[in-house]
Image (cartoon, rainbow, N blue to C red; front, side, top):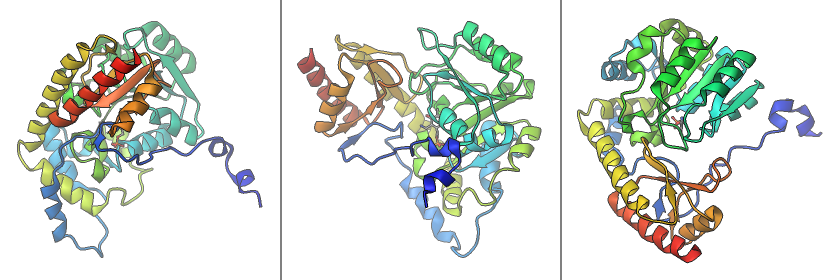
Length: 346
Ligand code: PMP
């Protein structure tokens, strides 16, 4: 039997997503936080392993609602925000439109679900190109637009007036992916939720020290939450993750302190990278920095040879690499290695 012939066409043409574990001593490739909340793992000892988790994740949604100043009914839980993207596209269908370069899962999940995807190039400053965006929206009438701000892998926020114009003029849902918003100087779009019925905000705990839990969520009008909730599988967020996330979120200032520390380290790292003359460093509002080098493949490999793993994004952004902000010690090691690698290649 030829299994491939039985597979749906849109799946047969895909390659599985490669999230390989590459051995290294300094891991700065995946936009994780260098700081964990390991003590909160104690919260799982009170769980009963024979019982299903709370299917509605009520405690966790309640504590999030309080943090964000929204109602519990406005929040929908996901097994990471990847799953939220899946649920949104399953619910609303395509065309799915997004600027590029951006987070790859909007396009990948759109394809998996057999929907039409529309990629619209950003402008030279990695901001939304309004001419191209409005033309594409008018022509393709997307059911969903995804805007990651701060954007991965470029690191910048899109101009808020451009984002709002797209929200106001799109015929369908506009999802603002705020995975990196905690690290940004601007406040984000949460306060505007009541003004736009087609606005969905996506957040995740992955970048702020809880990537292991796989917890992401959307915040939107109750009517949107009601529809998307129909495609969510009953127990999508496991009991261990719910318990640990509640414990950390109730833990007072610790989360905020860690985020501030990472943003401060980012600014230090940025200044040091800007002093390296043979590379171009792009401004960042996130927990990572994009930079351009003469030989991205060579520098990436040479850093890895020295035990430092960063992300080669040169397929998406010409000549570019992306480094996640680590501890000050990790950042120093990275800088030292980078200076010596680019010195060698120039
Ligand atoms: N959105 C963006 C912009 C991201 O960069 C990522 C992770 N790389 C995600 C969403 C997915 O995050 P999660 O771990 O919550 O699935």
